[in-house]
Length: 443
Length: 168
View (cartoon, helix red, strand yellow):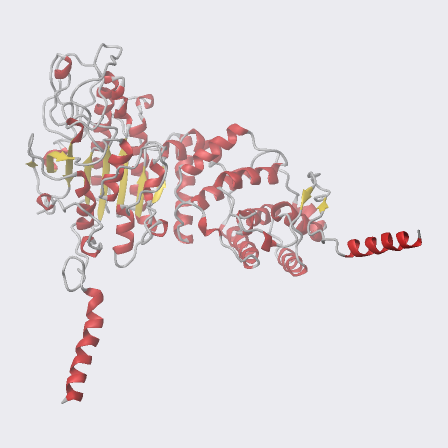
């Protein structure tokens, strides 16, 4: 009997050993099969600090003592201002607003931490609030959405499937991977700052380089491999991500092609017909090249930002103009996505600001005598919105959630929401993310 | 007097025999390019620090053009590198650009083939700050001799992108 008991216990223990790795932090016994809502996510961090009043509430100049109106007709439903126009109106590219093509979280909360741009970006990309100062160009403590995606997607995805593209430099290049010990650059995303990569600096220092034919690349690699075989250290510690050789060659060819087309002026501009190229902004440049990445690589996870609205610290008129243009850029991007045979009907786009702006103005007046607004962590600067737009069969259409004083969702919810869309949310270890999936958005 | 003489002689013998061996020597780089004198490593094992991106670009420019990179170019290239997530790819594209710029100090194919030993030795001294081992010299010489399509640009690019060049 003792022997039988021993065998039974040993069998149970053995079975337990096999099962244990599959008991997930969520309490599920087996890993999910990786069911996805769609295969592509584009997250537009509509950043730079967007005041709720001029965006969602369509206040226009109400808080400056004049009329209201909707500056963002691609994203929100509502009539444009009819007088006191401080901008040149661009006809919306979307026939109906993006809010009507998905779920509109009208009142979403940036609940903790300073309302600084780095903090707002980090919360949105890592799904964790942070108090880290804005002037540190360091990788975040918590893993980014790119690392969760690459580490927990099965089969594993190479970095060419994940992209982070920022309007500016500063601390933002460091947001493509974290310094978390379990994740890090081997799970990071590719990164471009298009204004530099494909702008004048890129044209001067990256374009028109020596072109090696495939056979010559083989010769180069033969010599390099020999040289490397006589040295016992590897340059793997270069800061940044490392693509595999196939992906690196693809990205290399892509960059040369896009630089050439930039030089020739044949890259598509996110501008209405007839609007000259000098109307381009930093935000539109980022969107323009994000589309080049999207249509070329069809990545599964792309995060881009806009940032020009931060001019609101001193130039309210410029803020309104740039808000109108950035809205057009987002509409243009969604229009392009719908025109692509791979991305069409298989992409969900999410738009959300990094944070809001203050309720009360600062002491700066612009050239039109309009008051400027900062973002110093008052309650108003914690008010943001989120749009989740996608195919009607996957995303609830024309649904509006949240109201003043009754927010639905937080900015840290976007990471688990993306993980849900791409089917790896259940694989993320428990305790890593504080937010919730915004399930209300999905059919 | 004789004792003092013997003591001095003894001291010279002792101290000279215990003199620390000089591991590094000053040599002149190859005669083709009139590079300034440099201190060579005796072995690549001495290299254990990885260059930063800006160090890499700055040294690469000096090695290819025999002059310091202008500060404005270094700043702009630094921005270009920062704007690309894959730093190895960024380095590769900047190297490819350098290889097409006027003023680059690179031998012609005829010069290379005319004296392969000298070309290989000078490439090792230029990029690695050391002399090649006999094995390295023979292997590369055979490789180049057996493939007439290997150009000096390909060889230089391979050196500039190799792991050893990333270290000092």
